[in-house]
Image 1 (cartoon, helix red, strand yellow):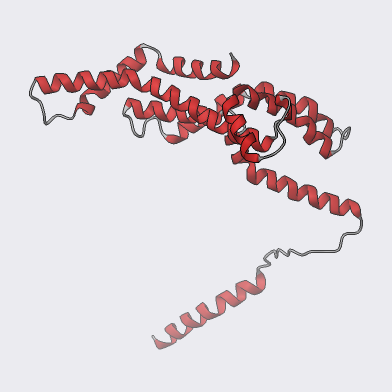
Image 2 (image 1 turned 30 degrees about the horizontal axis):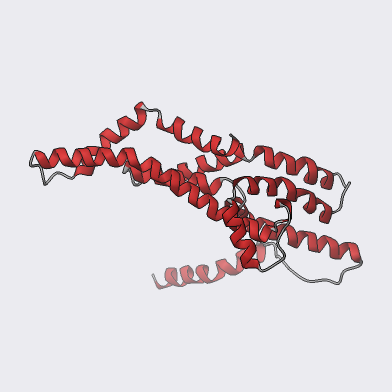
Length: 248
């Protein structure tokens, strides 16, 4: 018995060493080498710039598109219905993303035709491509940013006053667009809340008049709010109103 135990422990000690000798594992090495010319430096800077853009992509999506208004309104709608987890967050965000792709299609198409496509074809340099990509995005932001909000950030920047809307810097235009979108989204959310709030008040009044104080009004009003939302074709109205608010 002692010999069997000795052989077993010897096998446990010997097996990892044998496997390490027979198995060849790949090794990864990272290093910094001297550039052989200006082209290597330019390529490195382009890679760093691309990685930076990929890192900032969520912020760009949130701040320069219609995504903010859409996802805030859909969140208000879910809270107004009283269904805290239905539809799930993944569904709401996915719907907001696809609506954003649909609404921003003309703007992104302009950026592609004027800036990205000539740059990929080697017709213009990177700096000129960025300059050409600005007007379509700026036009969209100016169309949906309140003049009052734009003037606020222009004053806060303490820079020269722009003579035309096209001269407004992106540093002032982007935050103005964001707070304008939040204001519009909260306004739409208030209008969405009103009919469901009326249903809650009516149900609560009926339950109190019947003396049913122990029955939560939200439990009774939820089916009525759901059937009301289905009968008026609520998703069609909400999504159509959001799309028309940008495309109309």
